[in-house]
Image (cartoon, rainbow, N blue to C red; front, top):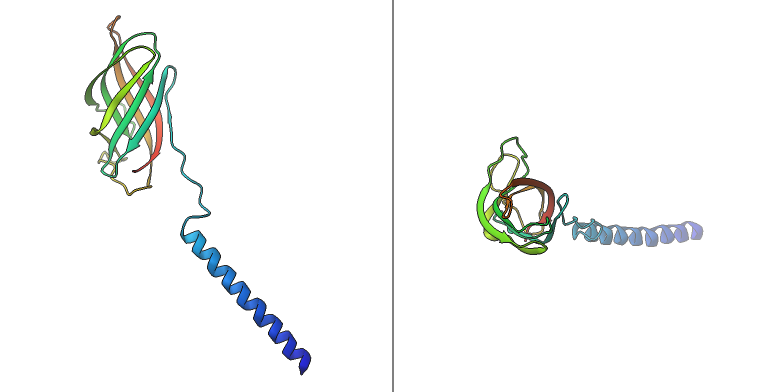
Length: 157
């Protein structure tokens, strides 16, 4: 009888410890302690670099773009979308950027990001957005126009 009682106490003690451990781990998982942070990135080919970017919960983009194309440029159109079609519509902007310099292409109020159904991509704080960004620009000295596409991944703020 004494051996059985000792065994029951042993199992009960470790059972309570296991239950408490499971509850603590579940609480940490619920609070997101084990999830990887979403990467924030903006990749353009060639001579463009995103210095800073922000996406509001209402779907508006702020983008600070650096360019080193060898020409002063004027950016006249921007598109931020998950649906990269053959004929994208561009939001009109008029931003002059000197060579080897940067400026705000989108200031958080006039350039929306769109979801796959072409609706404004509204999201919650710390939500995840991933898509394409198109920049239409003209070289001021040559008059040649270009369209450059990049990938963008960010969280809503």
